[in-house]
Length: 197
Image 1 (cartoon, rainbow, N blue to C red):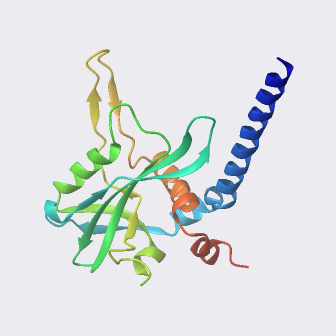
Image 2: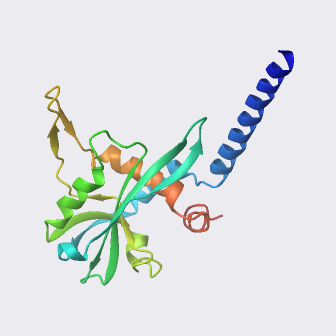
């Protein structure tokens, strides 16, 4: 009995050490996005983007693992809606970035529907990313974290409550910028743009 108790404690200790090492690795590889989010927002401007025909818009659903817990991984959901704007001659990517999924489905599907039925959107885009030759290719489109999305209301039949998707509210936009800078921008670019000495 004593040996099995010691083995159990050693096993739990080993798992705790592995989790700590895994979380340390995830922590070391991320940027300090919260520190520079407001600077990124202040360096952004509103532009009008032209939406192509619906069949020319591509959708990608993905996630980034940001940490580990006992029986699962912590993730940031990074759904993207990409299109080519012929007036800018660049690819743009509307990013719907969320820490947690909502029970009602992907917010990006509603955002995508809103985009696909419009000819233009008014988007807030970081000036560096809009003007840099580094951005705008199909492989590295200009990120769009905020645009004039119309907030939709959905009724839950069980309790007759209305739910709102928060995309493009100021708090949501700021949080999306923080997550984008923290988890999606490369360490090299982040240092070059925000941590210059």
